View 1 (cartoon, rainbow, N blue to C red):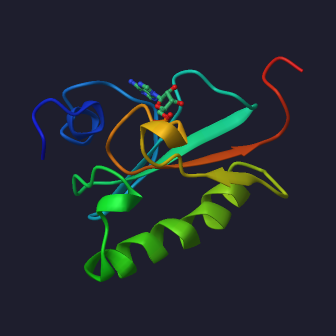
View 2 (tube, helix red, strand yellow; view 1 turned 180 degrees about the vertical axis):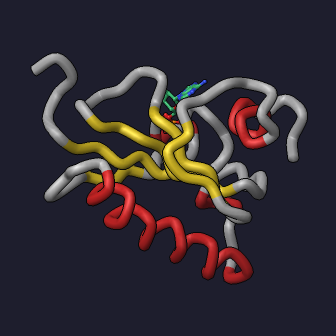
View 3 (tube, helix red, strand yellow; view 1 turned 60 degrees about the vertical axis):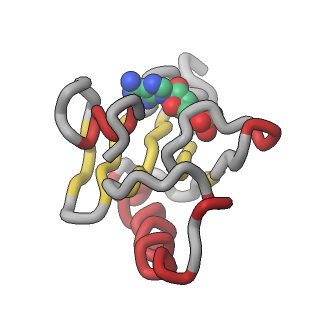
Length: 110
Ligand code: AMP
């Protein structure tokens, strides 16, 4: 855990989030500024800054995140969805704790 990491604080329960799934490895919560009707973030509990700081030891965890996307999207009623992992400042990453966006259902308020 990184003390100054926003998502580590959510993992620790120190900042509230609308959690839709949690197990020993990951937490999944709704994005605070949704860019689609359904927009959630799949976040490993382990603090990993970005995909660029991952290696083969995270292969199982990253695979688990990928496989959770269709399962949770279906539970949210989505028949299809988009995924996005912003990586590095130049890749649009704002929170430096690996996370996968899952979007679906059209634009908010549409
Ligand atoms: P990224 O640009 O990929 O690093 O995306 C970070 C995402 O985290 C953005 O879509 C934010 O809206 C979202 N976010 C920031 N703070 C929170 C929070 N407290 N709870 C839920 N989502 C958040």
